[in-house]
Image (cartoon, rainbow, N blue to C red):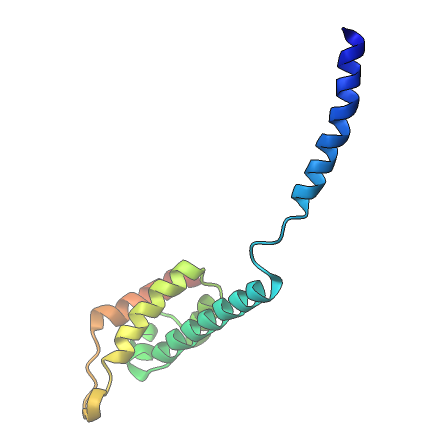
Length: 129
């Protein structure tokens, strides 16, 4: 009986070893070009969002409110550079709302939601500290 177990084991070991090598050579799910392209798109999107937030904070009314809170443009810029993707996305949505409310369709006045502007500044202040 032991001899038959040894014979079976000798035949099964090479079969099992060769099957794992075959599975290891499966095609990749995503090729490297698609992965590189996806990473580049994500980086471009984050860069655009950071620029949007910087544009809103560079406005004179935003600088005035930031000054009241003791925040400088350099501190805000440093905080924007270190935002996580989720925080950046949230902040960019609010900054987009502020930018969308400015001089739409040839309007001659700028109306910005003070709440939105304060929210953007408070988030930047909290992240700067």
